[in-house]
Figure 1 (cartoon, rainbow, N blue to C red):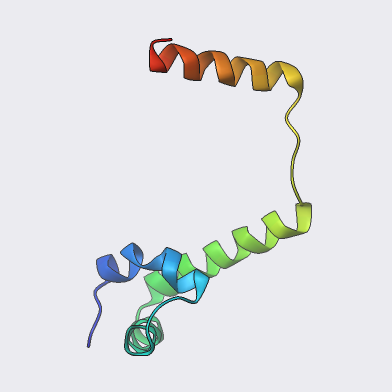
Figure 2 (cartoon, rainbow, N blue to C red; figure 1 turned 180 degrees about the horizontal axis):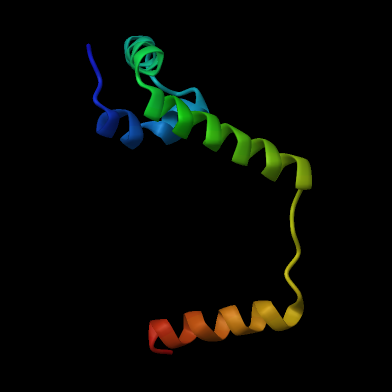
Length: 78
């Protein structure tokens, strides 16, 4: 099984979750071994995950949460 860049991109959530089947995981690894562009994407996403984990959960100020809720209510038409 060979994967295209688009196919790998579509399965990145499962790739990072470790939920790909063994055949698909092997195909992803084979693709990454030969595709510089996809390796960069995977590396960058891994780095984003590392940064997010190292900073922990962020708390929005009450004012920002209120503005977001207002915008969501407006978008819902409520």
